[in-house]
Image (cartoon, rainbow, N blue to C red; front, side):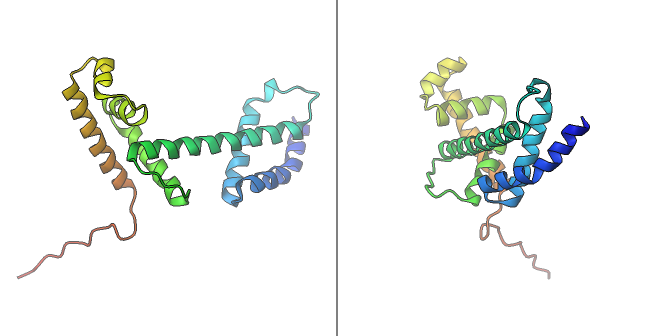
Length: 174
């Protein structure tokens, strides 16, 4: 194991450079290296002893990067479907908004998540959702309305945008 530690220490700068070339951001590169090393350590038993450690670690790092990129695109797509907005310019603000909205979506109750997902993401009709959940169409519409409202409230509670904050109320003292 000591030999592995030495090899790993020698490879860390190379892994970080590779991660930095992929992410173009030092903190993201560090996170990517850490996630890759965690994955490598959990998969160590499955590694072939005769294989090249460097190639194996670089492959894990690249797959982690691709997976994170795909996850980010899925979150952005889900945000677009849930909010009905289509911003063609990816930005840090949009990523934060996507993550916050998805976190808010996860905090909704199971019934609200199911209805919101079925209608907004899958594009099912109210009638199809009602049949799927075995409830009346009016219940679907009501749950959907409450789910959208709750999602807005949860999202707004987590995201504060410049200019969107209300000024404090002033008390008039007599």
